[in-house]
Image 1 (cartoon, rainbow, N blue to C red):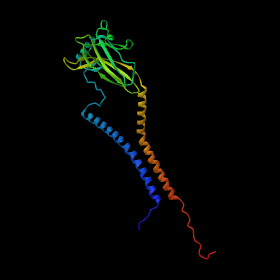
Image 2 (cartoon, helix red, strand yellow):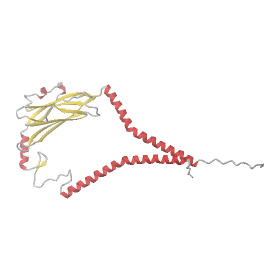
Image 3 (cartoon, helix red, strand yellow):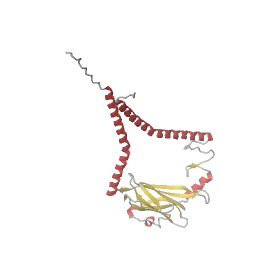
Image 4 (cartoon, rainbow, N blue to C red):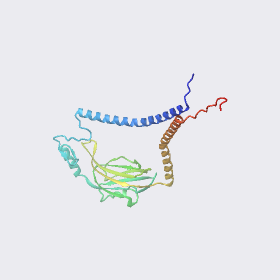
Length: 284
């Protein structure tokens, strides 16, 4: 004969399964991160062990070689003759002048041409006359100038497209020119950083190495057009909905599981109704 279980058995089983599923989901979401951190720590320890076994110092620790003098020019330990070469090259750099025209205000999505012109002879060659934009937007940038010059423009909240090579040779020229196409993006901060370098070859015909640098940071105010503001607001709502969807589903499942458990407990502890007994015939 098939055994029949009370109805509250099924309710308790459903509630238990729901709560177990939620616990497993929470544990599985945290397990990969913990495993990844543990793996990174083990990798770092293994790397340190390997380096120690090989006799190399840990990364970030500078061990100065013995019998090698310290060169103030490059702030490093180099051979004495090489330090003298660096000092001689820096002594022969010229006092030049650059002109830079970064925007102070832009609209989101707008693109501007940002230019830099550097002159060896600012007394005779005005670098500001070689770049576009209003006069009050052109910033003078005093700098050292040598034969090999380089300039880069980086930024936060922009896409930046160089319009030419970073390195330029002024051997047969008195000035050098750089330009970048800059587009403002949606961002909390908008900043442009110009860095100029004087480079020199370590050896005759060898690769160029920076020996003098100068940086300048400019904050840019970027306005958001009404339509772009509406689009960003709609996108933010959509992203918020995606991030909260999992939480809502989990909470709904938890509430349903708790409700099922309460219903099962009520059915389990509900007092049974007393059975009525019939009076015997003829009783009275």
